[in-house]
Amino acid sequence: MLNNHQIAQIAADVQTPCWIYDAATIRQQIARLRQFDVIRFAQKSCSNTHLLRLMREQGVLVDSVSLGEIERALAAGYDPKQTEHAPIVFTADLLDRATIKRVVELNIPVNCGSPHMLQQLADANPTHPVWLRINPGFGHGHSRKTNTGGEQSKHGIWHTQLVECLQIIQQSGLQLIGLHMHIGSGVDYGHLQQVCEAMIAQVSIVQDVGLDISAISIGGGLSIPYRADEEDVDTDHYFTLWNAARGRLEKMLNHPLTMEIEPGRFLVAQSGILVSELRAQKQVGNNFFALVDAGFNDLVRPAMYGSFHRISVHQPDGVERVGALRPTVVAGPLCESGDVFTQIEGGEVVSQDLPAAEIGDLVVFHDAGAYGASMSSNYNSRPLIPEVLVDGDVVKQIRRRQTVQELIALEDF
Ligand code: LLP
Image (cartoon, rainbow, N blue to C red; front, top):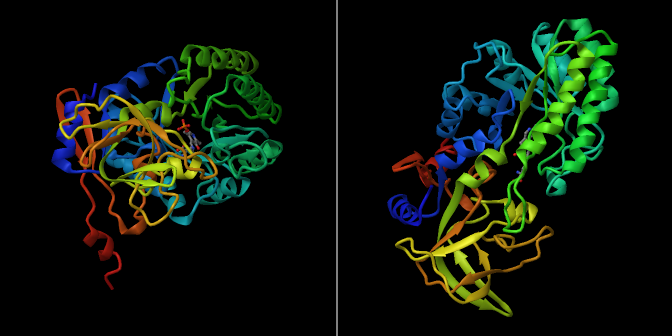
C-alpha cells in the first residue's frame, strides 16, 4: 500500500497538486465483488486509460456514458467484438448523432434511458442490442444531486413506460439483453430490497408481453466509509439479497440469468489521494484558514455536494504531522468563496481538526479516487494536474500536467 515516503517523493517529482492512485487497493476492492458474474466499472468515476487497462487485466468490463468514454475504453484495449458479455456498454438518457454512428459501427450495446433514445437507435440499426434502464419511481443518494430515481430524476425509463418501450423493441427487432436499475449513489439496504422487488415486477412485465431477457444489471451505488464512524459495505449481504432476487427471476423465466454490478466509487475511491501544498495560513474572524494549491477545479465534491474527505498533513519528507489539533478550514486558490474543502451541503464553511502545519507541508485529501480527477475542470484557467499510479514499488506517471499553452491553443484561430 502507498506509504508516506512515496507520497513525498512523488510530490517532489511531479509537483503539487497531483493525484496518486494505489493499484493494490483497486485490486482488493475488485476481489470483494467477485461473486457477481460481471463487474462493470462505471468509468465516469475515474476514467484514466491506465486505470481502465488495470480493470481490463482484472477481468472487469466497462460502462461508458459518452463518446469520449467509449474511445477511452477502446484505447485501454477493450474489444467490442468479444461476445460473451459485451466488454463495453453505453449508458445514457439520450443519444447524440455522433454517438449513434459509433455505437452502431462497433455494435456496442446501448442501455437506453428514454423511449426516444430507443426509437432513434432502432431507426439507425433495427437489430441493435439494448438494455433498458428503468427508473422504478424511487431512489436515494448521498446528496439530492446523486439520487437517480424518482420523478425528480431525469434518469431511466419511467416504470410505467416500460410497455411502450417493449413495443418499440417488438416492432423494430431490437435485441433485448436485460433490465438495468441504478437508483443512486450510496447503498442503503432498506432500499435494496425495494429495488429487488421493483426489478422482479418489471421483468414480469417483459414476460407478459412475450419478450425475454438474459441478464440483469443492478447498477452501482455501493458506498465507502469516508468518515471513521461509517461502516464499510457488507458485499456478501449485498450479493445475497440480489442473488435471491435473481433466483426468483430464473424460476419465473425458466432459465439462468447473468447478474451484472456496475460500481464506480467502490472500486476506486479509496485508492486515490489528492496531494497539495500548504501555501498560506490566516485567521479570518473566528476561522483559521489553511490555503493550499489545489482548488475545487481539481476536487469539486466538497463544493458540489458538501462531501467529506479526510485530510492529513505531512512534512515535505512525508512524515505525518501529529500533536495538538486545531479546527482548520482548508481552502484553495480559486477566486470564489466556495473554494473550500471543508464545507457541508449548502455551502456552510466548517472545519476539520488538523495538527499545526508549516508552509510547504503536504496537505493530503483522502478517498478521492472516485469523482476526483474525472470531475476536474479548467476553471480560473488552471491546467489539469498529473496522475500517478503506484503498484508496489513501481511508480508510474499516467497523466502529465496540462500546460496553459494547451488551453490557449484551443482558441488559436
Ligand atoms: N451506473 C450508473 C448508471 C450511474 O449513473 C452511476 C453513477 C454508476 C453506475 C456508478 O455509481 P457509483 O458506484 O460510483 O456510486 N459525482 C458524484 C457521483 C455521481 C454518480 C453518477 N452516476 C459524487 O462525487 O459522489
